[in-house]
Amino acid sequence: MADRLSQLQDAVNQLAQHLCDSVGILQQNAPLSYFGEFETNDRGTVHNPTTNGESVDDNLDAFASLITRTAQDIDYIITSLPDIRISQQSQENAIEKLQEENIQAREQLSEAIARAENVLSKVKHIKNQIAAAQLKIDKRVNCDNGIEIG
Image 1 (tube, one colour):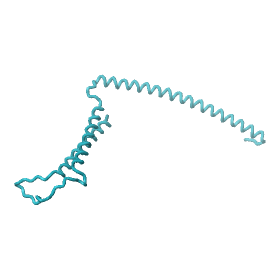
Image 2 (cartoon, helix red, strand yellow; image 1 turned 45 degrees about the horizontal axis):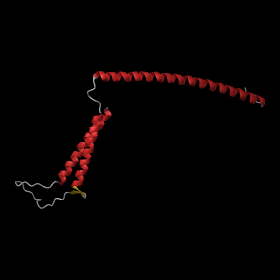
Image 3 (cartoon, one colour; image 1 turned 30 degrees about the vertical axis):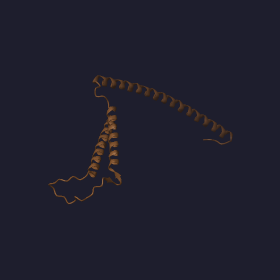
Image 4 (cartoon, rainbow, N blue to C red; image 1 turned 180 degrees about the vertical axis):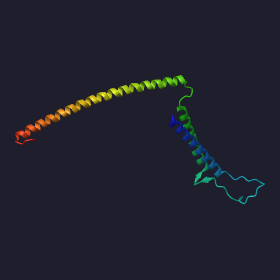
């Protein structure tokens, strides 16, 4: 669940970033407003509502789709969180069931380990028998060739 909460926090942070960026684009490309009581020296400046060759509408469409997609991601993450209305008793029952499954798995693992140790013991015994037989064969071959082994 902590992972889902981290995903939710990341998505909310991303949504906030998109909203701030879109406000920045709107502010950057907004027409100038003049107030009669304040003097300004740039009344003759022509305002060009483009950013790097892109129109404001393209930027606004891009941010609108990013904000929509991020909001949908947040909605999906929220729906995947566990239900808060689950009762204490049902949570305890679920934990008890998981503990029983854990006990069964532990027993199965113990049985599998015991079987594996039994097989290992048999393999070691057979290996020792093969080694002893190989030594007897080597001893006979060496004796037949006239080589004495001390």
